[in-house]
Amino acid sequence: MTARAADRARYDRATAHLDAPVAIVDLEAFDANADDLVRRAAGKPVRVASKSVRCRNLLERVLAREGFAGIMSFTLAESLWLARSGFDDVLLAYPSADRTAYAELAGDPKLAAAVTVMVDDPAQLKLIDDARDGGREVVRVCLELDTALRMLGGRVRVGARRSPLHSAAQVAEMARAVARRPGFRLVGIMAYEGHIAGVGDALRGRPLRSRAIRLMQATARKELAQRRADVVRAVRAVAPDLEFVNGGGTGSVQHTAAEDSVTEIAAGSGLYVPRLFDNYTSFSGRPAALFAQPVVRRPGVGVVTVLGGGYPASGAPGPDRLPVPYLPEGLRYDAQEGAGEVQTPLLGSPADDLLIGDKVWFRHAKAGELCERFAVLHLVEGDTVTATVPTYRGEGHTFL
Image 1 (spheres, rainbow, N blue to C red):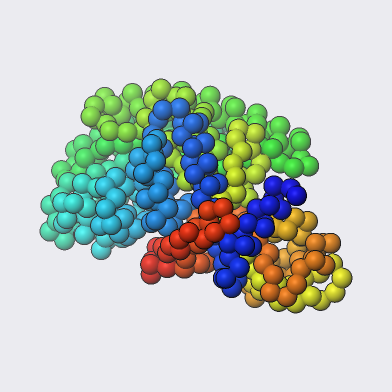
Image 2 (cartoon, one colour; image 1 turned 135 degrees about the vertical axis):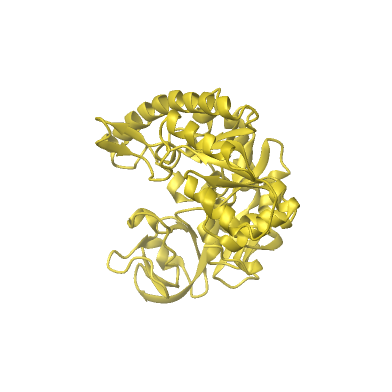
């Protein structure tokens, strides 16, 4: 029996009392992935990206482990909810225009002490001030650096379009804008190198493209390390009490941790290890989060149909944004139908061994987005469900 077949047997036994659709997290794999992130971070604390987890119970679990400290959140409303729930170090990774939440932040000393918001434009500071509604608490802010690799005089750009602050001079000027404005305190710098951390460099069947990606990433790492160091020096000249410099992501932990200017690493997807993280030479993890759909039809030889399963991930549309049939091994989508909202045909010889009501296990393309589809996660240890915990959705929250 292969390791994957053994996992399927365990998951089927653990969830035999549960009807599909059902989502699980294998705690042994989750904890092993957490240990690997800490190992690659080489002594620098790992800030957990809540977007990639979306379950308070599992956030608490990983933050209780040595080597992890703080949360990187994705909306201001989520940040305040987490702070009220007892998380005392929450960095909002994206600028917000939520005026109601800013008023709550500026009016509550506990929230203001726990939450740091992201800015990259003086207009965002004005929006926060206009939203204060009488609140006088000092708002902690972090500046985001654009990590994109620019070549040929800026005519070629590789990287996500995030912050407009690219040079040390631009970031330092934004730091001065914060310093000049009462009611704000600059505490950190963040830089997410998605073109390094979030792009696989070992694409199956595409050796030339994989080599090109590795060359791009090596160039980008070298350029960013120097520029980030310059930025940190320039900002510390304005704000010498800077508390943290955050960088990285699951796919670049060890590279970012090697930079002297970086004080902490951000990661989250590496806990669940969704399918988009199968194509990396820098690390390998264990799939920890899966969902199962029930077989409801057997249309013919080599074909079964499962209920639903069309859970595409965000990003540029393409086959890599679809969940992948994982267990039993050897199933594939029908190219004419793909993953459907209410039914999904699956092809392959393993289909002939599946009965009506059997479970087919899938891996989502991205990590936390799976939790937008399920109200609870069943936590599996060995071949037993040892706990059932709510996702954000199960607690009544869909922040985006």
